[in-house]
Image 1 (tube, helix red, strand yellow):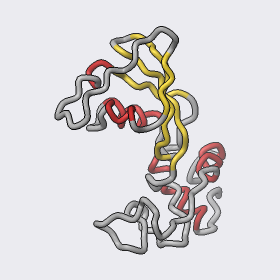
Image 2 (cartoon, rainbow, N blue to C red):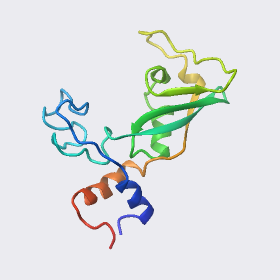
Image 3 (cartoon, rainbow, N blue to C red):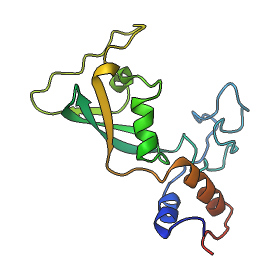
Length: 159
C-alpha cells in the first residue's frame, strides 16, 4: 500500500487546473509550452504536487508573543503544516509579502502591521511576527507527488 485511505483521498481531492498558454507556471527559464515546476505541457493538468496548484489557507498572526488575528492566503495545496510553517517562519520569505498577498483580519483594537516602505532593503516586521498554520493542510509534497502520479496514470494506489 502506498498510503492510508485518508491520505489517498486528500491527494485525490486536490483539483489541479489545466495549464493555459499564459499560465504563470510557464517561466522564461523553462520551455514555452510547459510548466516550469511540474514539466506538464500546455493543455494538460498541473501535477497535484505542483506549486502552481493553490488552496486557500489560514494562519494565526502572533506579534511579539501575542495573538493579533488571522491571515488567509493562497499557497501550494500539497504543503502540510510543517512545510507551511517552515516557509513562513524559517525560510527567506518576508512578512512584508503579507501586504500584497491574501487577507489580513486583525482582532478589534489591534494596531495595524507596520510594513516597511516599498524598496526597503531590510525588514523590521519579520523579527516580531510568527505565523502559525491553522485549519486544513495538504498531505505533504512527497506523498502528493508519489500518490498523485499513480492517480494521474490511472493506476491503483491500494494493494
